[in-house]
Image (cartoon, rainbow, N blue to C red; front, side):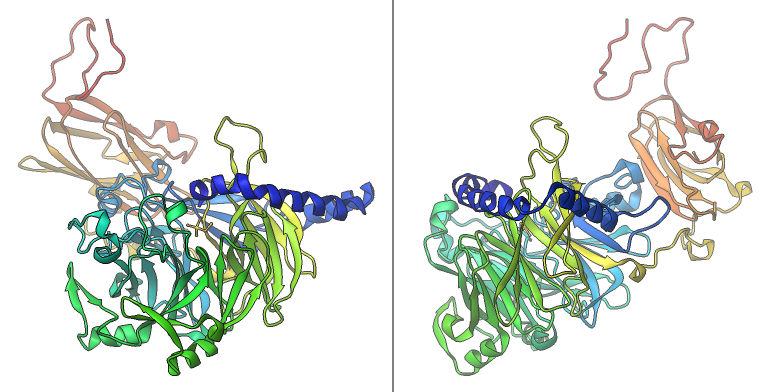
Length: 640
Ligand code: K7E
Ligand code: CUA
C-alpha cells in the first residue's frame, strides 16, 4: 500500500486532515487541562504492565519485506520477540544451520503480510501461525510451541504475488493463497503484455494443512481472470465452506495501473465454494498445470462467483457470525456489507448480470445489505464482542466504529498517521474479545525521535471496551507492518527447554565423553556438546578442502541456557537452545587457525567458552608477520 497510496494521500489526505483538524479541537477544546491529564493518567494505567508482570495477549505482526514476524505484548505493546521466517536472522542463528538454510533455499528475503493463527471451530487454537510471502509465493508455518519457523512451502506453482494469503478456514483445513500479479501459466512461459487480458491468468488457491502435523501441501487451485487478487478471508459460521478474495483491475489493464485500473466503478469480490473445489479435485474435474490439479470454472459451474464491489477494493472481512462480508473500496468513502444469505439466494435464482471468463457476476443490488458511510479510504475491518465493526480509513487517517445490522457509524478516532491494517483482540475468531484494537500505521512520520529520512513506524493501542474509543498508547513498530493478530496469552503453551527424550537427532550426544571428531575420507564429522562453559571437543583439526559437519547439542536442560557457536571468518553462526541439536555444514576452504566461541552469554565464564578450528594446508608461521592469513575472497584491510 505504501508506495501506491502515497501520492493519492497528498492529494486527498488534505481533505481528511481538514476534517481531522476540525474534529480534534472540538473534542479536546471542551476539556480542561486537568481533565486531559487525568485522561493521560488513565491511559497510562490501562496500558501499564509492571516490571515482572506479563501481558494479557500476544500480538503477532508481520514485518513486510523484512520477511519476519514480530511479537509484542498487549497492552504494554512491548516488542518481546522476533521470529525469523523468510530472511536469515543472526540473533537466533536462523538461516545458518542446515535445516533453516535448506528451508530458505535460494531466497534471502520475503515480503510477509498477513499472519494467520490456526483455528479450531473458528477460534484461535494456539498451535500454529502461518504467514505469506507476497514476493516469492511462499507460505511459512511457525510452531507456537517454540515460536520457530518449521516449514516454508513454495514457490507455490501457478500462484504469482501471493498477497491474498494466509487467511485460514475455521478448522484450518485450508490456508488461502492468491495471485496478485497475473502471469501466463505455467510459470516459465511468456506471452506479450498486449495479450494480457486473454493470455494472463490469476489463480486463487487453498493450501491444505495436515490437522496433526500442520504440514502444508497444495490443496486446490482455481484458474481466474487476470485481475489482481488482493485480500482474502474465509467464511465462518453461516458462511463456513466459502472463501472470499477482493480483486482490483477488473479492467484487465496493464501499464500505469494507477490510471488504467481505476476506470470502472466496480471491481469484484471472488466468492469460492471451497467444498465444491475440494470435490472437483476429488472427481478429477481438473487440468494439470505445473504438476497441480487446477480447476477451470468453465468446467465446474458453481465453484466461484463474483460479487461486484466498490471501486478498487482492498480488505474483505467476514463478520464473526459469518453473515456479512465487508468489502472496502479504498477509493470511495463507503464500505459495503454483503449479506451471505442474499448471496446464496441470488446464486439459486441465477440473479446474474454477466460473467467473466465463465464466472457468473451476481447482481450488486440483490446481495448488498448496506453501504456504510465510514469515511475516506476504507481498507480493513475488525470486530468486537458487542456487534461493532471497526474500519481503518487510510486517507482520513482514522478508525470508524459502526454497528453491524443498523450500519450506523457511532464513533471515530483519529490515527497518526495513515492507518493500514488494524487488529482487534481475537478479532478474526467467531468470538472476538473486544477490549483492545491496534492500529498499524503506514506513514507515521514525526512520531518518534528523528533517525534520518526513514521515519520509524508506529502502531497505536486503542481501548474499545467502552462506547467511545480511547487512545491508550503508541509503540514503535518494526517496518513495515501489515496485518497482525492478537491472541489470548493463555492459549499458547510454549516449551522452555527441549526435553532430551524428544530430541530425535541420531547424532546428538549427551555426555562430553561422547564428544569426538571422526574422519571418513574427506568428510569430517564433529559430535560436539555445549554445556556451561565449554565446547567438547574444543579443537577441530582438519585439512584444507575437507567437508566438515558439526552436530552441536546443547546438553543443558535448564531454562534460558542457550549457547551459540560463532566461527571467525567462516560466516558461521548458530544458536542451540537447551536440549537442541543443530547441524552446520561447510567446506574448510580457507587454511589457518580459526577461533570459535560461544555467542550467547551463558555464565560468568561465558567468555572462556571457546575453541579452535585448525585447517591444515596453510604456510607455517614465519618469524615475523609480513602478511595476514589470507581468507579467500577480497581482503578489505591491506596489511603492510
Ligand atoms: Cu499492507 Cu494487507 Cu499487504 Cu492492507 S496490505 S494496508
Ligand atoms: Cu555458552 Cu556463552
